[in-house]
Amino acid sequence: AQTVTQSQPEMSVQEAETVTLSCTYDTSESDYYLFWYKQPPSRQMILVIRQEAYKQQNATENRFSVNFQKAAKSFSLKISDSQLGDAAMYFCAYRSGYNDMRFGAGTRLTVKP
Amino acid sequence: EAGVVQSPRYKIIEKKQPVAFWCNPISGHNTLYWYRQNLGQGPELLIRYENEEAVDDSQLPKDRFSAERLKGVDSTLKIQPAELGDSAVYLCASSSGQTTDTQYFGPGTRLTVL
Image 1 (cartoon, one colour):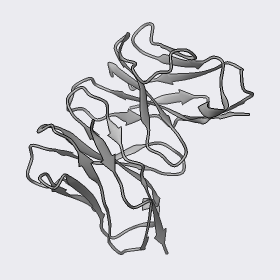
Image 2 (cartoon, rainbow over the protein chains, first blue to last red):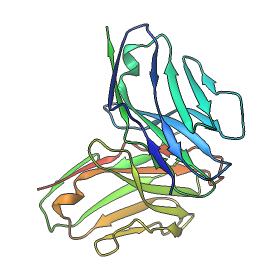
Image 3 (cartoon, rainbow over the protein chains, first blue to last red):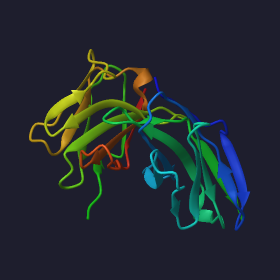
């Protein structure tokens, strides 16, 4: 079964600094999709970034970028120039084909002014 | 474009009482998901609909949980009777149905069972 592991329950970063959130996953599939979702205290899960496994190039969305290491089954999220509004729970998720989306346990990010 | 709508946002009930949650997906989205999110954990899928058909309900506790999506649009998730362990946030999400598509989530319903 596919599992997603986020080894950092909590992280903090100074405003304007850079922080990296870790995620590893276990799968025997070769074609799949990886996601980072943000869940602020309001609870609405918002897609931050997605990565298709067949693409070698790391996805980037403005201040958010990923480091996708397929062989190592690692998918970390880098947030540059952190802002107070980035404070939230961040969930890494995996999906292959029509199977369930599997989520990690989340990392709580605190941004210090 | 309106996002996924859920109601109520909060619900407090006593154990053994019934409760229902409602979800309206993004217009045109054929696939609808119900997730349960326990405190401090990521969401876990309860059931997935393709139009009005439940295509994956393997994680739905069928002795007390039921769901329906009669016209292939909005959906209702019901618990009867509720137990203390059912306290959680219930999230609804929708997608266009393609395997490559992103799931869009609603704000969730926080259920507290006393």
